[in-house]
Image (cartoon, rainbow, N blue to C red; front, side, top):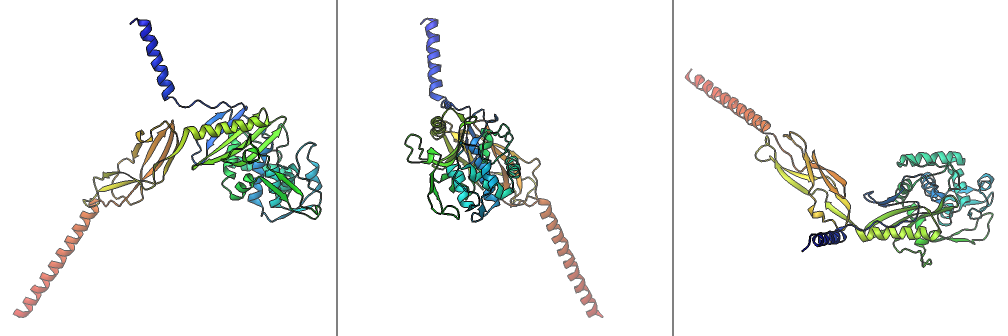
Length: 408
């Protein structure tokens, strides 16, 4: 066989192997910014300009809802002010609130997160902080608390301002935090709501549907059966935005789409990310809490206690590519230097690390039992021996004294 033919065959074999064993191709996302994260581990599965500052539009209301929930009772009544309504530019969505109208925090939150009502955002901001500026300060403080580094808010609803920006990663942090709260989860998964009659609106006719077509079964094109929220956004400057969560088979993912070309493409991009996640990744418990890792001998321990059980202090769960055989991953176990008795059950005696897809997962190793030092046991025997000797001497002394008394 000619050399050229041999080389060609070898190259074809290599290409076949690469196609057979390589990981799935990265999803094709058209939006300018995006991120996909598994919520329990925080592992980023996909990102595109995820820390680039962009305009968040109404996804801003995620932070607004968080602060309102944490600072108000849902039953609190709010009176709509003139300043709250006068700040809304023409063309932005409202829920038809009126100056002097009395309405509950709960109803305003549903208007905020289901209809994306900008008037509800201003009314809630004033109720919580007195002014929009004060509320914006609270928003930025909370963002920093959550670890956001590329975010600055100047209003509670995302009405466009060059000084109002965030990024895909920061919005993920806000969404993850919010979804830990049951009230927030209920709000963002609600598909329709009707405001009750109020003092200035006698009819309960202000009904609206969610702006998030991912969770709306009536949206045949964009509905995603596993989606459970969260928030849409749009301005001409921000483009089409979406923060969403999907839950299936114990796996929860949050996706953020920023500056998509149109409304449909933000949903297409989001569904593409979710499908990619479910098709290629799984959640695996490598080790359960209190699992026996190994048993070692402590040199200076007593014969009865010198064998020390090593236990893991917490469950190690990883999000891994389905093509990886977790059973083949060997952990790195590091024990404390010069482990010597005494050791008490529950003491930290080392650490264990697993590296999966270049990500490290670690836990502490605990002592599973007490180890008593030999020296302590020897001292106990010595003291006991001395005491017995003194007792024997005392007894013998008493016997001699009795014999002497009898001779007299």
